[in-house]
Length: 431
Image 1 (cartoon, one colour):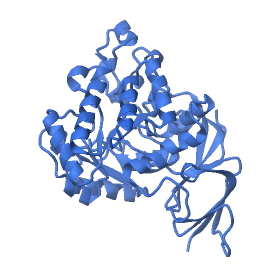
Image 2 (cartoon, helix red, strand yellow; image 1 turned 135 degrees about the vertical axis):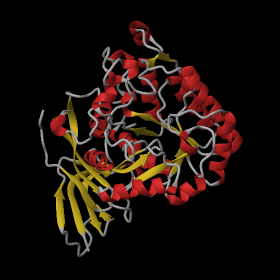
Image 3 (spheres, helix red, strand yellow; image 1 turned 30 degrees about the vertical axis):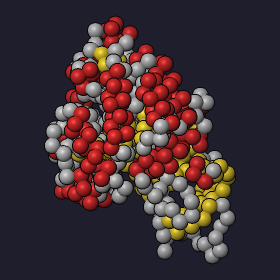
Image 4 (cartoon, helix red, strand yellow; image 1 turned 120 degrees about the horizontal axis):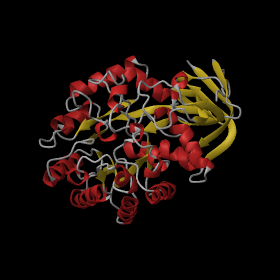
């Protein structure tokens, strides 16, 4: 019998409305009690969380682990290590691995790799179409049986709207969540930046907002037709927030997330020729960022994701349009959340909910809270610790972040997954 005590911490659990100084007691991988010490409890290990926050472990809706197929960029071991360092206990993996997650064998391979890395809570997303080619539907039910938590076509386009309709009907018939990144690829036209002042100034091919909003509108109409439950990934613009607000009023079975970098950066922050800022969807205007912030605060956007995409050096080397999009984002998520709290964009409780209970609800997982009997998935962080984003304090194989070299405030000290400590870092102030 394994017993663990976390004492003297500020316990925040949005599901139960908890915000108090106290202790959490864990026995046999589950939460035994919060607050009062249970009779006869004898801790085999005790963690002093004084002046730290104790909350549910973070859940990410879109983490690329790059394995199988792209181990030059990262591995399951390296990125689950980065996830643990960032306070994450559950990861949802997009299907664009090599080979694509369109067969039970690939699902099993990823889960085996995760278990070997000591990070058991990795949930693959099955491919919506075979090979992500956008034409022939995958065997979604077989993928669900193999352990896929949802289906998605990731960023590759679908052949036409009829294929999307059939896919949504199939997913709905098996009660599968469909993750959808709204992007009309014809309108995007291989762009690399928001169609705005920055793209014009530097002669870069732009991606207009309508590439997202038109695709979003089409999918919403098909939700009405099919009843499929759809989660919109990486929303980036103000008009999309307005459309989602109306969809909520219409009681459509939809949810959405936005990437953390979209809540901080805009096209005005892009350093010319610095491909660390190359992301899809692109960094948009200040008005778009403000609408995203308001959308999260109001619950119109349910969750904040990392959209973690580690790259090797060569992938980000070259002219801005020629580089691969994406940010390595697991390890900066917490301090960036605390920046939003400091700016009063969100309360700490709202921010934690957007990383825990809300994504858990979207995925249908029984986690994301600290209620008695729940699996002991816990993040403990020091909101005052400072550290520098550099090689000495970085776990991910991908160094591609626009925040490289910045001083961050807020550091995870313990990550506990199903009662097991999978990451531990003593207090530090390294900046």
